[in-house]
Length: 316
Image 1 (spheres, rainbow, N blue to C red):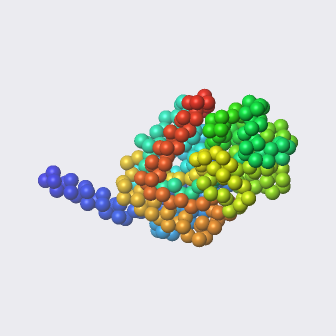
Image 2 (spheres, one colour):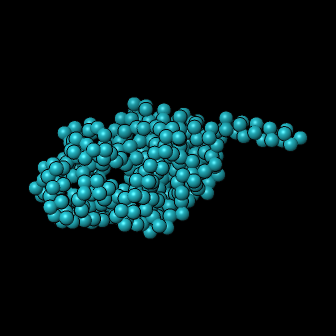
């Protein structure tokens, strides 16, 4: 009798997985409408809805550096009907936060990396440097005298720029702002001299000639900035750092459901209309498997934890 009961439960579970999804899917976005994460969520969700046969409803839940959305996701029923889009920024924050109660590898099922976008190191046009070699030489000759702007303490910009300093052996001074746009007046005037930010956020200032791009953080040059060398081409080997966007769902979500979501998202981001909309924002599709994505997130956590340990960066 016990064997029959267990078999019946297994059959019910298998049927449930096969029927997934049975109702609309909630996609939590830990940022406000109009931001980078929201943009990717809204570009991808219509096609994923079509492939899954159920509507994917975008639900913006801002606050606490993504902790509100993470908490809602962690507490949701692990049946694939609650997803969360997140980014390298959330991973960096969790890696350096002393108060974070989340373990991304334990508390969640990591589904897929949706997309990625390189950063651009740019300097104020008031800076008398034309290359990475000149920037590094000036920074080494004047430790701490070059100020760099970021969108806040423990943000990805902050962590990536400190990683850059550690990599090249130079000391820069951090000036945090409330968002990238808030930093532009000081960057343009030269009160701060450098930033490492997304190409999309800097494009207007670069086109206007107010900021000078010196290098991109991707392995290959960007199509939208073909004349700007990579860090590797600039003499900084293996410095490849990307802003990226991925999906997670509660821990204990059945593997078959996670695999189904991954397949449909991977198929979505390769569709020409979706890929072209992402490319217009400087973003390229990825669509990695759950296993690949879990290994990648683990490496990202380790990287930014090491940066925090060496620099003393913390987030509360």
